[in-house]
Image 1: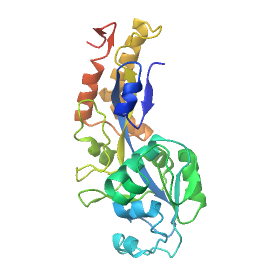
Image 2: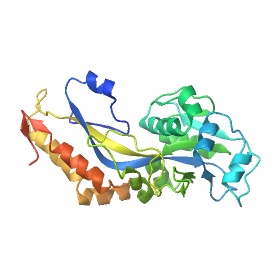
Image 3: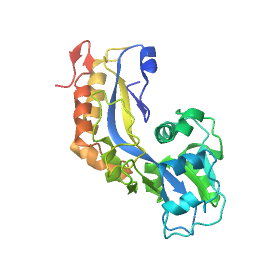
Image 4: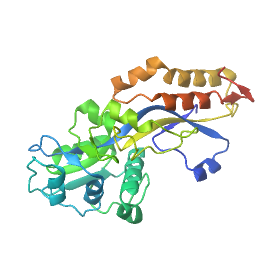
Amino acid sequence: MDFGGSDAYLSDAELQEMPAEVIHIPTCMGAVVLAYNLPEVDSLRLTPDIVADIFLGKITRWNDQRLKDANPGSTLPDKAISPVYRSDGSGTTFVFSDYLSKVSNDWKETVGTGKSLKWPAGLAAKGNPGVAGTISQTPGAIGYIGSEYAFALKIPTASLQNRSGNYIVPSTESISAAAAEIPADTRTMITDPAAPNAYPISCFTWIILYKEQAYGERTLAQAEATVKLIDWMLGKKAQELTTHVHYSPLPAAAISNAEALLKSVTYQGKTILK
């Protein structure tokens, strides 16, 4: 195997279980968006506490006063809310629950963060297609899906209030804005960012690879090809292509960190990328 891919970085404990040192290189960005089925509502605004309490089963109807307060001028129906969640383990669930654990102490203490969770309320569905399909077939449903899937299929999504108090529509620009500052090893969740124009449930898509490429029966040519491919992904042309496949480009700071990490990759102790 040349490398792996994930929306969730390896924890310190997981890194210690690896047979050798690995590095995380972000290649593009995505987000988790809230898709809903309310034909009578043109646009929907949600606050962090509302999202948490919907998936905790505490807000059960669309005409709840808190939803009305967040959506002045809109007529929300007296209809049951059906939250939809992933039945399978996924990075999307990890990102969504990481966000909820940051914005809701109740969620953090009762459900927590993970790729698979014990959900307190709602309907289960497998994968982005399953969640989207369940939402489309269930009036009053709301669920979380990957932004690339929602953008590609033009699924209605809610705008979400960020830490600055602004309601942000998920877009390539608002997703990229979430990664203005990251650590050198790039291992950080960028949910609930401070940037006033950032969409609050954004994430990286990482390539995870061994820092020393001389393992197994790998040749120098294989290692060089792997590094060359990732280097191309970080380049201007590839980053411009991200929006064509409904992802978001990396901001300059993230590219700089990623390039530095890639230059640390070796084969038999010698740097591959000059």
